[in-house]
Length: 222
Image (tube, rainbow, N blue to C red; front, side):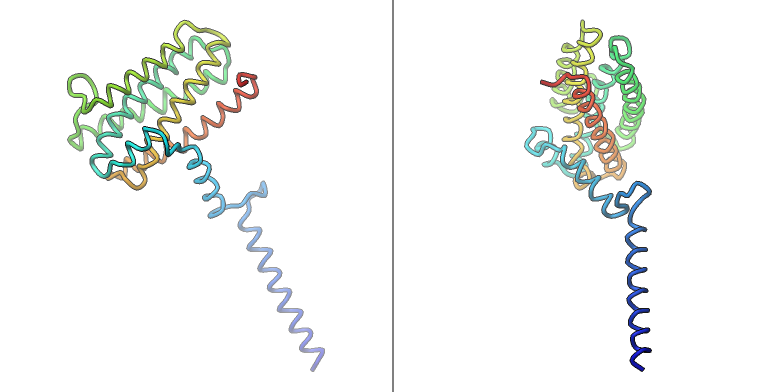
């Protein structure tokens, strides 16, 4: 009887051990990284870590909710994206490194598509246009002035001087977009805006990380 009980105990221990190993393996990918919940928390933490909650952009948008957030976000992000597209187009002719030109091409494609979507939403949802005399608020004009200031930092530069300035300006530009988009998950009314703000945070976090790495690799940082 004693031997039989020992056999049963050993069998139970073996089953528990196998179950534990299986669960651990299922929660890892081929590279040994944690999957599912752990991966999601890591990704969200990385995105959140780039949000500057002390910035004027974040504070302004965090106070807006529902239609107020959506109207303001769409109007200003259209102008913000236009600034990024203009900077990226200049990079296609003035940058010396192929990596920057490739990034610029992606920015032009992605953000032009998002501009088109936001312009359509303005019409569909009855929001004022964010251009010309129909501009909805003074902050949109301020966004245009900010874009002009960044373009001035790039105009007249070529080669490595342009590359260095472009990374500096685009990192700041992306940071502003992330700060504007951060409150969207909880404050936006329309699901389209919630999805867009999440996409902006994800894409531009990755691009900031890449650009900062280039600054180190190319010795553009002090």
